[in-house]
Length: 547
Image 1 (cartoon, rainbow, N blue to C red):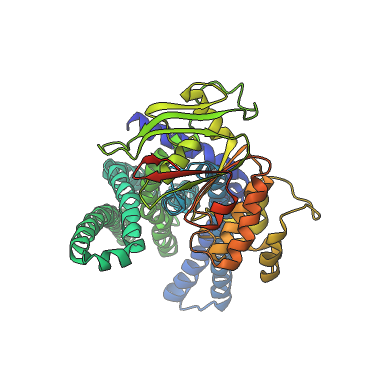
Image 2: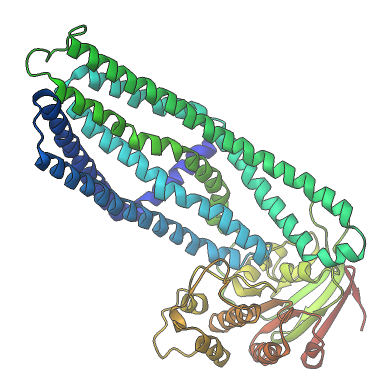
């Protein structure tokens, strides 16, 4: 196990403590459930023994057995609910920490951020809701059944104990390369999902340019690579399950053969002739499959652990990134914001997206960045937000150097993408975030229409990047968030794209209102901004055009 995996394991284990109460109750219900099943087996074996040996039918024993069997399933249901609650609690807290980071990380657009949250953080839920509970249940239930087995027949206990030691070892051996496969699968999923979405967004342009067949071949190749990675992951899961079933079958067969030969007198056990009878043998044989019940689930969920480790390795750098630079002057007000000789090219690309940009931003007011698609507007906005660092030239806030200016911009700018990022949670949380909002808390008037459409008002639950909201409603929620959590610099990338005129007429005055008290930088094709902007920056293929 390498240091990265150990670090991921420690990180995941620390998160378990955040739901120790729910896990504790789940473990208690699991033990009670196992106890009910033991009593069920006892009554059932006694009923069968009386019937076969003495011809005596005792319906009350069957009734008691049925009652305890029902209790077993009822208590197991309660245990599963608390385990699922624990998984949800831990993942929701991870998401709550992750969302603000992604919200301010303008290197990822809304779609990429949604994919990131869905694929990465949601991969953790099976680990906390299934793998951890099944591993704890395997230990608790196995310990209980081992005590009973050793008490009644030590050789049965020895067979079960050996299986308990061997199965986890074989799963570790199988899982040695599983995390690598999961890492590859996650990388390909995130990479190719963004590619597929990009082609889907530009399908009309692809058809118009008669470029459909080359794009089809390109996407087909990427799809096959992703399918191959998925198949590799599934092969590991199938292999682990097949090995387990083979070993479980051998163990149960060994117990059945031993008990049968002991009863026949071929292989006498220590209790043979001294109370060791058919009822005891049937009781032990009935318990044996249940011994492997949680072990089976544990093994089936083992690939969830590998997924979680792979996801944790990607999440930890984002969540645990140490602050860079000196943060002592992050609260100073904006006095000057200058860009001089800025040029920028993305890694592995020889083409400069921006070339020799020179700007002097005002302390407050609306600055409009214009240009055709691909002219570098979004890249300039990301540099102004501190998400991208200047490679050539100067990006200076209050006369500071590039590094400190970037840290100031990251701490003091808010960013609104044309595809807003909506959190999983209530509408109130999406607007007010962690801020404690009272019943009479003031909020922008334009939210009234949204609240009027929602039966649950502020308590409306939003999920899957706010699929319960229209595109315009998402923009309004994001704009309200920016207004209630003001930063000295507000950056909006195509805030009116794909919106109807009615929504634009609502958003535009609010953006102008923001510009009265702070610097607002807007990239937009909307002509209405031309009439209200305090300054206009024209870009053409990365070049700054003169007015």
